[in-house]
Image (cartoon, rainbow, N blue to C red; front, top):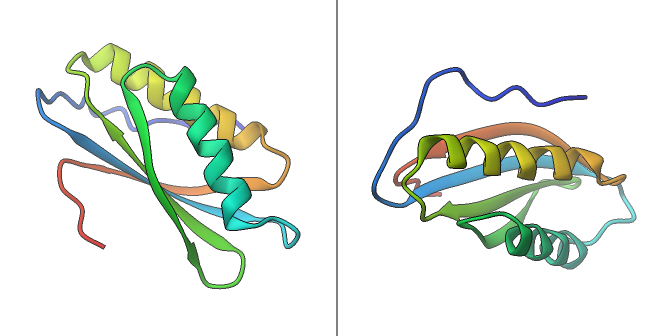
Length: 104
């Protein structure tokens, strides 16, 4: 399944926050998900993994920050992260929220 990024262009010279809601397999731990996200942030330009938390029984939120200013680089990095999450055999992306400030 390919994730489609919203067609609306996003540009900011400031920090962008990305919250990704996922579901995961029963045998997966939140620490395993966090380790995977940390590896993703190493290979994704200007994206940094912030935190992950459990939602319900088999759901999690993944929080990333983007510190770049280039719109096309932002979209490419986000697309790479979403595709990498979908390639993980135990994760499924459910929802993506992009904003400058998000309070949970």
